[in-house]
Length: 294
Image 1 (cartoon, one colour):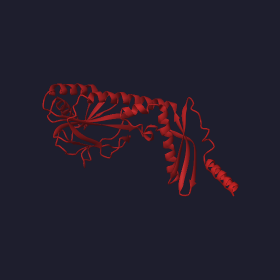
Image 2: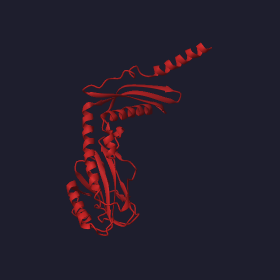
Image 3: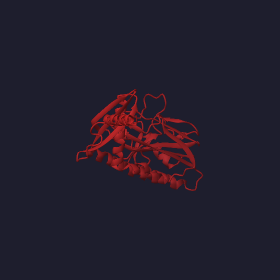
Image 4: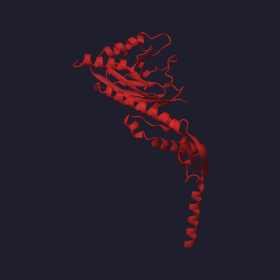
């Protein structure tokens, strides 16, 4: 009886290993053109979902191997493999159904040239965001501001729309800026449709406004990792005056003003200097937002 049980256990174990493709335990090695990484998923409700999960597992390991994840985390960025590794393909695939569930094994294949491209993007983004974090330290945190995307997402693809909600805990003059990693800053608020920067405490401001079919923020190039920043002050000052003046000068085809980061930093420094020792209270909030091509 004992011998029979051992034989049955051996057969069962052999069956489990037989489910895996022949290449699973002997994967491709990286070469000058491609990185290779296996991925596996189990207990998926269908074959398509099993393959999707296995591909994501392979992408996650590829991102770890690129070697920049710790620096991304320090900057507050997510590597988001499902978005970032857009040209990752599958060189081998195996699936199996067991009862109602599916398992999948894939061999992910990622071009070395694409690796260098995403690595350079992340390095640029990290440098940009770390610089902005230093600038943010100049603004005192004397009241809080709620800032989020309306749908809760932080990763968007080309052609998608994004909107924001902002809610300060004090009556204040408020600006919302999108600092892009190429050094450009877009003034999201105030804008053509809401040129006044004054916002009442606990008011939830939607940017773009709800039920406004003529104003939308559509994701486009340059692709990268942006720092979206809300800055509020209880009294109007030179920062708000300068940014509001850009809105007043918008041409007929523009809904939002654009400026260089250096000009923003100059205006921020000026405002901090002129309000030092005053009774003006400041608040700020930031989120990181990542955009990708299709």
